[in-house]
Length: 292
Image (cartoon, rainbow, N blue to C red):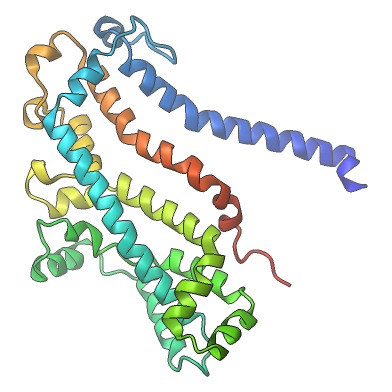
């Protein structure tokens, strides 16, 4: 048997080593950030903290949680993520359902499909997108962060392939019973497509939660920034007066620990959501890979 051969054993060992190294590359930075955030000012300033807190203290988290600007940015980040995920998944699901039909049932399907692919390969770029956002009246609103990124063509193609692999008898039975397209989509397609929908939802949530550049481009006030844009201002600009950090308290703690605590709190929601979607993730990520 091939799985008992020496070459297969070596292949397995190499795989485990590679996966272990990649896992460490993902986990160790997060552990370092957590350790710095829980360390004393002297240890963080001396740069002697690795993966375990030195001089354990929660002062940085007390400073972060007491920062009104940070809490406001956190709530705006939640708002953007929820709103952007609902809008994006609604458009992607309905577009993928329509494009999964044959040419006989949806004339012009290929034209729309090639239009999406063309726009994925040749986007307008930053300046045309900025002009569109300003001219449509959504500039300096949360919709400027949601609408321009509402259609992710790659995710739509993955969803389209999943819909195409569903048995056609399911839709035929629904149509015979008098169901329309919306009923077929919401009561037949979506319930049997939970792995794909959960995977696409996770991708979309992570995108909106971590996206910081569009917030800086399309929003003018720091008070309206979502969390990712706020953290970029804290980490890169290091302007603590602007972001509302109390400088008297900052003398008692290190700015490194404050930054680390804010970064860790910013990553915490995705870390909490992922385990609930993980059971769908493996099945959803390989959708369309098996051909019969």
